[in-house]
Each structure stands twice: as structure tokens, then as C-alpha cells.
Image (cartoon, rainbow, N blue to C red; front, top):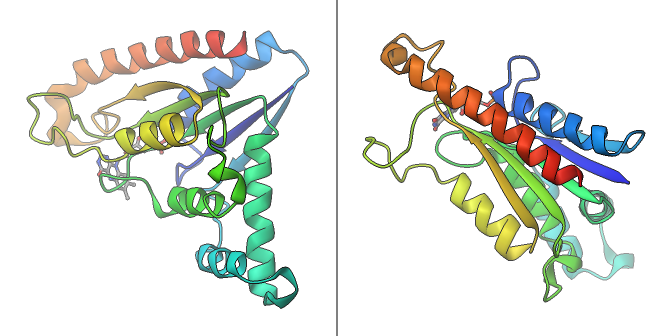
Length: 211
Ligand SMILES: Cc1cc2nc3c(=O)[nH]c(=O)nc-3n(C[C@H](O)[C@H](O)[C@H](O)COP(=O)(O)O)c2cc1C
């Protein structure tokens, strides 16, 4: 069996989303020893920004009429979609950046949305187990000044769960910047508690994921 893992953090070291995803991946491998994990780190190995436009226009052109750029963008979109469709389970680690998803994630998502398979009535990933590990530096709960400003998590829930039809589990962690931002010092005990809870939730999600 194959687990497909996508990391969207722009850093490889000290990443809170990777920490959660590592736990989920370890639980998956514990339940499926010897299985394959296919990886793509779009925050570091960035997809070309012009690929989406070329994939859209290439999709409207007859294959023999495509420019080399369109052909290569359509191929890239097919590869990205194959990675998802061919996996038995999917793990996405996607931080909140500027109150939304990063351009890197959106480039990946938009390329996949050019593949004709997304138009299947049951969605691209019907019933496929998918764990979303998402983290944010601040706090967005009810009563906080930025309540409602997290446009990453609800967007992803709708796209992955409703549009693509995946069997979605979300593991979240807030206040990841509390330890490094002096202004957030009073929030550190709460941040530590949320950190521990997120790691517990990751273990739980990973165990259920691996079944
Ligand atoms: C460029 C940039 C923009 C960010 N924007 C936000 C934001 O809008 N809201 C927020 O709560 N945190 C924001 N953060 C903080 C990240 O969500 C936080 O550092 C998170 O832990 C990053 O994921 P990672 O630890 O997996 O790398 C931002 C961080 C960076 C580097």
C-alpha cells in the first residue's frame, strides 16, 4: 500500500506541521510495515508558477496543437493527480500563511483541478482516508480578535472533504509562534497545552488512519 504525503511548509527544520505529519506517518508505517511513502515537499521544491496557466490553456487545445510549455504543464498536472489517486491514503501538512493557503499549495491544488478526473460526480478521492495536519502561529478561537480570519482550514475542509469526497480527518495546532514571539509570552502555557493535545490527536488520527 502507498501513503502519499505532501508538505507545504516553507521550512524543513522546526516545522510544526511536519511534526504532526511525522507522527501520522509513523503510525501509518507501524500499521503497514514496509509500505511505501511517496513524498512531495511543495514548500521547498516549488512547482512552477506558470504551470497552471499553461495546463488550463493546454487542456483546451488538442494534444497535437499544444505548445511544449502546455504539454509539460498538462503532464505535471497528470502526475500530481496520479500521486493522489494511486495512493491508498493521503497526508497533507499545510500551514496557515497570510490568513490563507500559500501560493505553493494553491499552485498544487489548481494544477490538480485542471485534470479531467476532478469532474467525476463522486469527487476525485471518494472515501479515501486523508489526514490534514494544519497549524497556525496565532489563535483564532471564538472570542479572539482574529476569530474568523483563518481562511485556510475551512477552505481545505470544503475542498478536500466536500469537493474531492475524501474521508477527512483534521489535526490542528494553534499558537505555534508563542515560543518565539515575545508579545505572545502570556499565551505560552496555553500554547504548550495545545501542542501536547495536537500531538495526541496526531497519534490518534494516525492509528485510525493506519487501520
Ligand atoms: C510568511 C508567513 C506568514 C504567516 N502568516 C500567518 C498568519 O496569517 N496567521 C498566523 O496565525 N500565522 C501565520 N504565520 C505563522 C505560521 O502559520 C506558523 O509559523 C506555522 O507554524 C508555520 O508552519 P510550520 O511550523 O509547519 O513551518 C505565518 C508565517 C510566515 C512565515
